[in-house]
Image (tube, rainbow, N blue to C red):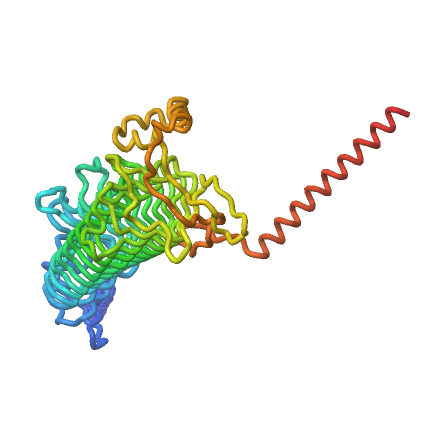
Length: 481
């Protein structure tokens, strides 16, 4: 009996040791040592609490966090790397921030972060960072008022995150991304849906690339912030695609800016922005492709539009008459409801509409190219009595493309007394649209192989048609016989 009792005790101890080994999550330190974190008072659903793991770690450690649901709020106050395995969930209780980072050199990777508060005053966030050199990478932010909020967090990286806003009216949502007083930030490869804005304030020398921001208010809003590169992003189905306000030194390259048709409906808005380069962008299907007010602000600076496509917008270029020192070359203005509108009346003649003898392609150009150099022999002149009236009284747009607008423009041509003054003139319009660089979100042009297949299909269709015609003729001959 005594031997049997000792055997039972030994078996129980063995089972307890096995349970402890497998039930407790492991923290991997920077040195590669594996240490179980055991504290009964911090047990959560069979695991040590995430906050306890963070508190017990040494600065510089890497914590590998297993799958499961971990209670928030979480505070990281030392340099650490937290990496999730199989998408562990950090879930808040619906109040305040879910994850708060107050130390420099913190990396947070591969987590689901959900359940922030709903206070716009406190700016409750999924992930809030207030220290430099953070890396917020490959996370899924769900059910958070503000998604990722960087405040005084210079030299940080926000990469590869999926951000979904709360199911709220747009006026009550927070920003999916808010970058505030955080220069040299890289925002790369993120997807954002159903939030308010992605916003950069007072955060110069930042880069925004390869992102997809949709179904919000401002796809990207830059304010009081200089020297940004915005390239190869997709901004669609927002009220405004990109709005640049009060700054200098912006490069917008190869972005797809489409279907931004909210109350403002601008693809790109420029307000007192200087030294701006827009190159290789596709600006398609917006209410206004570009809206420009006092840009550039300083006379010694410029705004340059080069090799962009403005197509199927209600207004291609909508500019206030104070828009000067803009330069246009190699752009395609294709089938916009109005190619150019001067908001408030006036003209845009103090801008350069051609550079080095090459202007832009206008789908409504009515001139000709006698010498075959792909440059029109007559200038493209934008003047329309009805469009001039719309600039002063925008509500008249209700009659656009109707008999009233046609009658006014016909009268202006018949009676020179009513002829409107040109609003702009391109002295060297292109008669063939230039080739544009590739843009993310659009299918590439057909390859030679695709063209061969298409030609074969067309040839097959003609063969079937010819066979049908021969059969029809035989039937007619048989009936006549």
